[in-house]
Length: 60
Image (cartoon, rainbow, N blue to C red):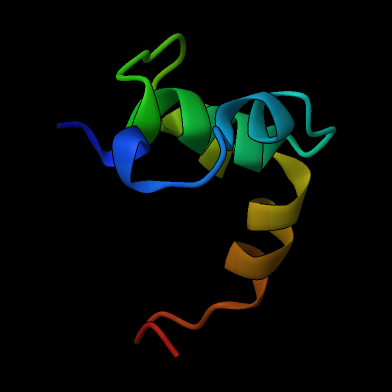
């Protein structure tokens, strides 16, 4: 039995068709075991970079 068998419908199609690059990336990586790009790809995108620029040296 897989994790999909426990669900009423298959969530993969809506997740993969999302226009959100983060949802698509983690759906492929975590649910389908497909890693097309290393995780550094995500960290280098605009949103994570904006957050990281505000982070202090102590992590706060």
